[in-house]
Image (cartoon, rainbow, N blue to C red; front, side, top):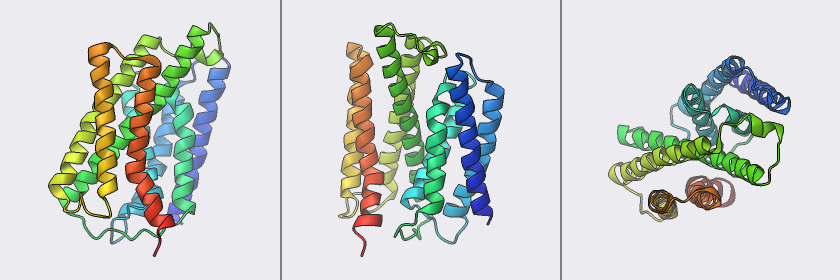
Length: 266
């Protein structure tokens, strides 16, 4: 009962926050940041309670597809909440809140054939934490890259949509994008390294595709940041590389879990 109430409360708060953010943008006004953050904090608290009940409260750690999706969405909300005090990330709420609400609905309403892990060793837990952080930061970077791409297209076309006037300057938005990518790559490096260090089956038959795709994603993000440093890559080039790298990362974990939990079911 507590789980259902927490989930429904989180969904309602996320949708209310997204509506307020979008309404302010339509009116060419900056939404009340304090109110939005209070709603985000309350929604995140309900979200965290749901994640705890579904993943950690039982005798075994549940890392099912939609449970992990809810955990990543929660981490994204917390990242933007923490970073929003000194960085212009508040505009991402209009995208992130509906995504977080959807993650709660899926975690509550969709069951899979995942068998909870019996391993709760510190190395395994550290690897999971690093992987969740890496996925979350890079997911925020993808959202930021889409906003940057849209903003650049509108400026080049000399269009004056109301939303455009609520965004910080393009250079500020691009700088923030690459800050997120650097942090995400650092966390992804630690996640992959901790997997080889603490997990025995990183190259096993069941997870080798996960390992290979994760390394490919790491390589794509590394090339992108090298290109930014050496050749000044930006705009559409940076956005394409960001999307490709994140798509590989999603295939590495969520794609493989989708197959094992919903398609290749014994």
